[in-house]
Length: 276
Image 1: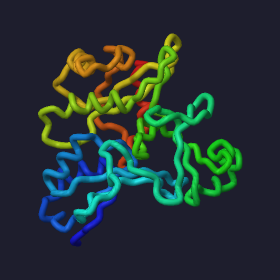
Image 2 (image 1 turned 135 degrees about the horizontal axis):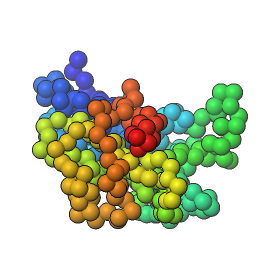
Image 3 (image 1 turned 45 degrees about the vertical axis):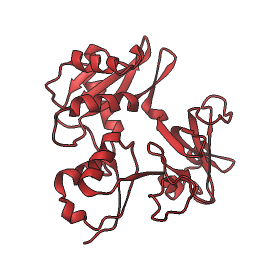
Image 4 (image 1 turned 180 degrees about the vertical axis):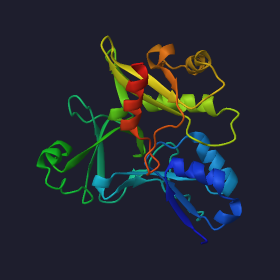
């Protein structure tokens, strides 16, 4: 179909890497990815095969749905403001404002500090149909609470650290699931030819520490000790490293039809396995 613009998730891009030949994407000009964190190695692999480097954007259904996006490199030699910062989701679109506040106090944070991302603008929904209670929780004085943890850099680019729901409070400290997932992905995909998602980090309630990290992973030749040692070697704090009895092999990682992790099913599966 001589597609020139491609919008998708990292999961879909992994599928294209496996199933699509370069000739089928020979007219591809712009690739925008969103919905979940884009792994650094996927940027490289996609560009190497198809000759186009993806850029990340960010949005939500409640925000109609786009908030920010990195801009593909300009074809002009003229000097412009920075068009993209890899690892970020770009700058907010014209007419849209974003700010980062403390989840506890609501105080606005300075550049570089992680907190709750709020968005305002004409793209913010009016509310949830027939659910004034949910609307009141999500929108305050025109600002929509995204539920995402983020920071803004000195150039105004947004960096999404993770979902508030994808953090565990363990021993009073916030532990990011995505950070652990990224490192486990590198360890589990080492030597593998495909780009299939092989790991998911979730959590279950724990009487002593508040929450317990659980790792669901596909079958691997690596031992749990090797995986834990790998996490230690990249400098993750001990609090971020799941215990030996918190790794469970599964046939498939729970996924939604949208290409996102099915976090609800992952938590339920984790609780089921941990209870055995």
